[in-house]
Image (cartoon, rainbow, N blue to C red):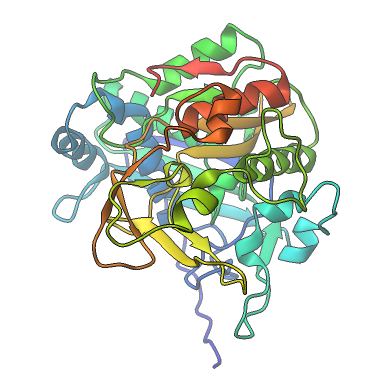
Length: 401
């Protein structure tokens, strides 16, 4: 089926009393983000609406922790960003786009090796060639653009909130798909290092606490910027990205603590062997660890496997991972690998194997990976694995989960 290309709309000055402009560079491969799944839009490579959505999320993550209820959060969010009945006060424009060059997923990921595993391929696997003749997806590298942010009727709180969101997005977010796994990572080029974090403690700890903002007491109602942060060694961008991918591949297999990473060896988490193999529809609760790291989970059909299928969130089917892994550009010009665990509501229940009935969820009391790491929940295991991998305590941000 042929597609008809249309001319992009003419650029116009953003409407607002306060306008700031920034030159931004995409420092890792950008996948998706266009009107078609898995594709970068060749006409409108960087979409203002997508950036607005990212900034809105990071506004909630940095400012939303101060609100005790979702209703209070929505009230303040709608006043700044708008809702179905009220236009927002923030306007976004994108100009002077340098589209970079196109590369397919295999060129970005490189080849998997038995000794080191898939490397970056562990993060970009959704963009590999799929069954039913779907080819591997193309990414764009070296993209740059000028971002305009305008604020109507500015006041001190609104300006501070938008700037915190912009700082968090540039530091921890990205553009396109799979940004929580380092795809489409960003760096501000002009003004140079304006929002970039400082590399050394205690300056970095103070920078992070200021970014995290105030936290309301009690369990989190929505994801907020709070958790463990690692930034110790600098390296080229793709080396930092690959280091993070190897760390996460090992962690997801449970090859942490006393177990060294063996890409060709089986996983050590008990989710599959001790629970899912024996799972019956009458079982409630179900004891699993990996749902706390994001949903859905897919177990592929294998000839000898007693279980295959999906594990999904009981409410929405999906739960974005609270763990962000991303190469981050610091204000000294260096790039460092960063692991961040957002403070987010834990999944209360799951549906197993597409059963209509949801079952409650709890952490296995005798999970061997957690026991080996000396912790009692999966996010604490991430922090413990960070310490073992990089040899230093993670920096704490705001209130801990």
